[in-house]
Amino acid sequence: MNEKETNSKERFSNRVDNYSKYRPSYPNEIIDFLKETIGLTKNSVIADIGSGTGISSKIFLDNGNTVYGVEPNDRMREEGNRFLESYNNFYSIKGSSESTELKQESIDIVVAAQAFHWFDPKPTREEFLRILKPNGVVLLLWNRRIENSDFMKAYLKLLKEYMKKLKVSSDSRVIPEFFKDRHIEKKVFYNPYKCDIKRLKGELASYSYMPNEDDPRFNFMMKDLESIFNKYEYNGSVVLEYETEVYYCNIK
Figure 1 (tube, helix red, strand yellow):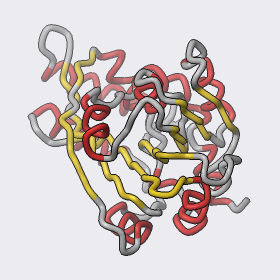
Figure 2 (spheres, rainbow, N blue to C red):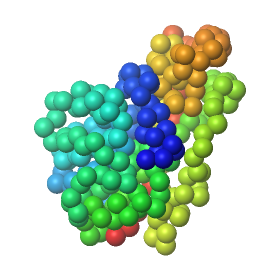
Figure 3 (cartoon, rainbow, N blue to C red):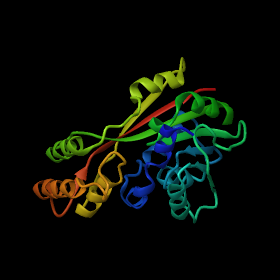
Figure 4 (cartoon, rainbow, N blue to C red):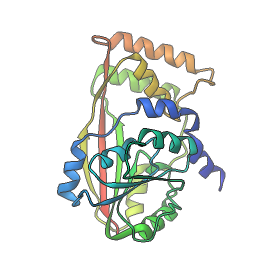
């Protein structure tokens, strides 16, 4: 395993608590949308690749699907197991996008939620083709921030000021290359949520490209965040505005 692979698979180890508590989920409307577009049923077998703390797996488990959560990071996987322990249709696997440990042609839908940009595209595509059944679908999900308010403009400015540079390829380039000549469909859902200052701080601290508590800039960042919150809060909360982008493609 090279340094890049190690970094991408371990980079969230010291952020698990904040990730599981404060990251936004995905709109419930996605399930009905997938029923209409790709024929999702309760019998569809899902592989959630980079399943992390179980946020994306849960929406399919609630639909009655069997879900295999594939996660390389031990701490993230353990938190996902705890979060989803009440579901008997969830199976946790220590694996990666390049080596899922799943059986050949055993999966109807491969899901990568907030994770695709960490994958090595070529071996990942080969592995997805191996585990997918004929006519299998790859589904990519992202929650992306949108600049829809004065608060969001100030929040995004803070992110740019403190964030570390990421050595990842842009989705706009990687997605077409990954799906090659296949037709890619896209749908966008509005996905806002209210948060108090505790949740706002936790959400910010969950991102691997932001300073962590052992970084000398962390306290300065949090003080700046408090100032933004105090300026724009209403009844003790602000609205973090996201759009959930959904890409789906039949690759086999």
